[in-house]
Image 1 (cartoon, rainbow, N blue to C red):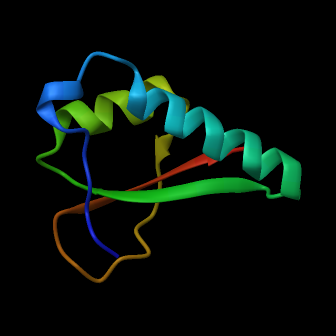
Image 2 (image 1 turned 180 degrees about the vertical axis):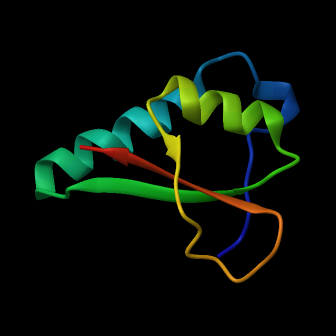
Amino acid sequence: MESSSTDPAHRGRRLATALLDAAHHHAVHVGALGIRLSVWKWRADAIALYRKAGFAETVSWEDREQLICMIRDV
């Protein structure tokens, strides 16, 4: 899976937050128990955003070093 981020020219418009909200809404709609993601540990801004959106670090399911795994209950 490719990494992505908000284009710097479009930051501050809450696009990433809107995408996280849409993912949560979809997860509720389909009856998922949680949402999980992984993020490189040096992506401090993304990690802060995910924490603000309710994600917490969890045991890694990744084999790649320096990836932080996070989960949010639905």
